[in-house]
Length: 370
Image: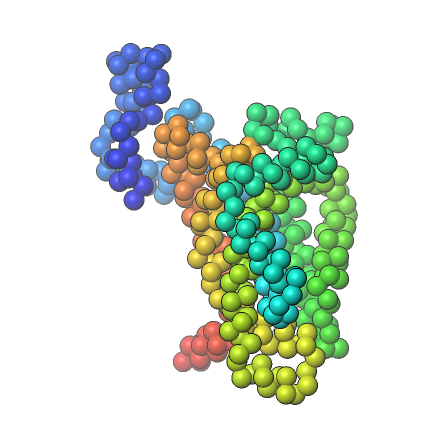
C-alpha cells in the first residue's frame, strides 16, 4: 500500500540535492540507489530482501536493520511502559469515579481526562518540559540537539559495563516481571485468605520491588540516570493517553452496574470494594481491552510528536524524519517494525482478554473437546 502511495509523491530522494548536484549527477545517484526502477520491480526487490532477513540499506549508506535495532529499546521504554501505566491508571480512575457517581473527584477527574486527551500534544509537551525540567529540575530535557549519551551523567557511566540500550531493555523486563509478581501475589492472597492488596499498597510494593530488582541486578544507578531523561516522554505519553482509557472504563462501568449480577452481589451483603473490583470492574474491563487492542498502532505512530518535540530517538521519530527526507528503505523498515510490535502487543492482549472473559475460555475448551 505504501509503495503505491509513494507514486503520489511529486519528488524523490535526490531532489534535496538540487542545489549541490546537476541533473546528470542526480540521475546517476537515483540509478545507484535503485529509485529509478519501476515501482513494482522495487517492491519485489524489497520483498526478496525481507525474505532473506534484510531491510536493505538506507539512502545514506547504513543498514536499516542495525539502525532500527538500536532504536527498539528507546521505543519499548516509552511506548510499552507508558501504555501500561496509562492503561492501569486510566482503568483504576474510571472505576473509582464511576463507583462514587458524583463529587469533586468525579468532576475533576473527568474534566482533567477530557482536557488532557484533547490537548494539542506539542503544547502539553512544552508545559511538562517547562515546569518539570526547567522550573523544578525533576527531569533532564534532551531536546534533540544532543544525543542521549551526551546527556547521561559521565561520572555514573564512566566505568559502566552496560550500554544504555541494554539497561533500557532490563528496565522494561523488570517492569513486566513486577506486574506478573504483583498479579500472582494478589491471586494467591485472594485464594488463600480472600483478600487483595489495596491499590496504594500495590503501587508501593511494585515500585519498591522494581527498584530492588534494579539494584539487585547491578544496574540501579544507570536506570535512575536514564529515568531522569526518559521520564519526560513517558509522563507526557501517559498524560495524553490515559484519558481515553478512563472515559471508556467509566462508560463501561456505568453499564455494568445496571446488571442483575451486581444487584445480586449487593443483596448478598458483599463489601462494596468486592462488588466493585471483582464483579463490576472485571467485566467492565473487556470493552477497554478491545479499545486498547484496536488503538495500539495509532498510539505507537502517534509517539512521533513526543519524540520529535523532545528529541527522543525512537522508531516513530525515525519514521517521521525518514518520510521528510524520503529515505524509503528506512520508512518501510520502520513501518514493518511498527506492525511487528503492534502484532506482538495485540497477541499479548488477546491472551489477557481470554483470561478475563470466561466466555472465551469456555469456547476454547469446547473447541478443544470437539
